[in-house]
Amino acid sequence: MLSSSPFHGLSAFPITPTDRDGRVDTDILARLLERLCEAKVDSIGLLGSTGIYAYLTRDERRRAIEAAVESVRGRAPLVVGVGALRTDEAQHLARDAEVAGADALLMAPVSYTPLTQDEAYDHYRAVTEASGLPLCIYNNPGTTHFEFSLDLLAQLSRLPRIKAVKMPLPSDDDFASELAILRDRTDLAIGYSGDWGMADAMLAGADAFYSVLGGTLPGPVMAMVRAAQAGDADSVRKIDASLEPLWDTFKTFGSLRVMYVMVELIGLGRLAPPRPILALEGKPREKVMMAVEPLLATG
Image (cartoon, rainbow, N blue to C red; front, side, top):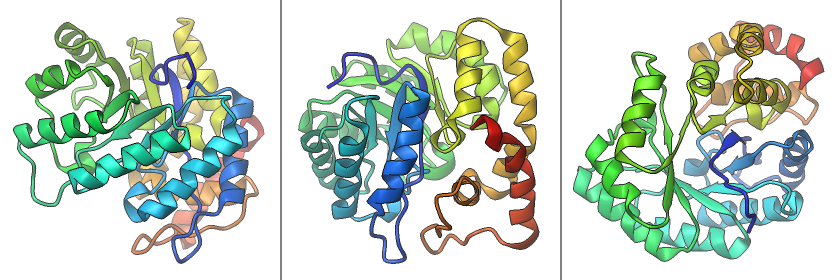
């Protein structure tokens, strides 16, 4: 395991390429991961939402982790998603990740029947007891429809293996106030996701940003994060402005669909997202291509 923290700086989240039957294409995955290692991202978020974890079997998740460990070879921490409907399944996934060589875990409170705060706490407690790896809470209410209360985050932060939280963008864009509240009540490393909020989050002092774009085109994202860490707000705003057309496609079509177009544009082949998600075609695809092509030289 690496000595550096997996929950600080830029965490880059690539797609998990698969064939139509859901089998992971380890060759394309290795090529994606090599781009991230060459860019020197601070960590790699494998099997996150962009990494279609919810659409993969346990065997294919394990196959992806093993391939990633072999490809990365310790050059960046691997943070592996282990979210699942059942607590025992999430425990199995956590153990699989640890045995395969992951450095840390990421878990969302996946549910069908809405969870109570107590149920979520018990779910996280049980998974942390199944593995010795540090874990990041994946707070993603847009997907899970679960809202973490501040009290629950504080309670979870006292579990010894929970070290970080991945937050959604605040509805009022007041990162500074939210960071102050979370730091007062927890000792978690605080990161955000939702790439169009990256500039504001990092300039406000977030510990990490969990980036979809960074998982495929790390160049401009790394430049933005490093500029923010250096306090260079002008450079951050300039890079963010250059990415605005792409952020618009994320908001309109969903970042996952956009990434499948981008993977083709960088020369890794035309992949299809897992059904029932459909690939972008026609004018939506053209709009993504127009937003992406000016960025390829800096990827």
